[in-house]
Image (cartoon, rainbow, N blue to C red; front, side, top):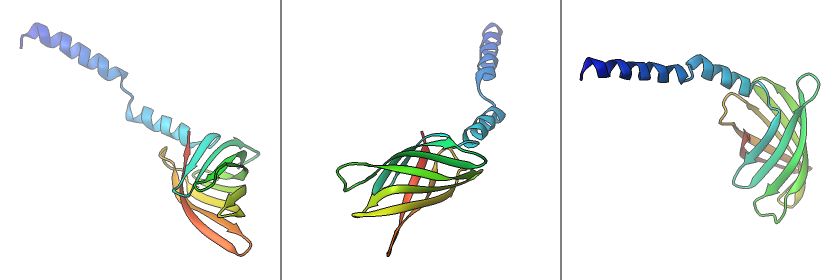
Amino acid sequence: MRFSRIIPLLVVTLAAGACLPTGEDIENELEATLASVVGPWTGASPTLTLDFQLQQGSGNAVSGSGTMKEAAAANSVPITVTGTFQRPQLSLTFSGMTFEGRAVQGTFTGSYTTVGGINAPLQLTATGYSKNVTILLQER
């Protein structure tokens, strides 16, 4: 390759490299994303789906509302969400849920350490009833 072609190629390569995010840029963006749980969320498992919005309360409290749909159900039902977020620990309680024909409350606790979401058990309870459903909660 001639020297006159190497210089422009080197300049283009260096300029393109300046546009790429650094490891520090990526880490800062990830930190900013994981610092808050405020916003829209989804939850997916083979037996139910969740769609809800979280907002910040006082201190580390979070709350919100949305819908829950059991896979076998014709329609979704409204739910309310309360909980806490003390990074990285997210603890949520879902009220208003219906599962396997009964009114249940769901509790969920997991570590929010990756933008891939939180995969953990959702414990569904009612009088004389308890069932764990593994669910993936993801911020949209």
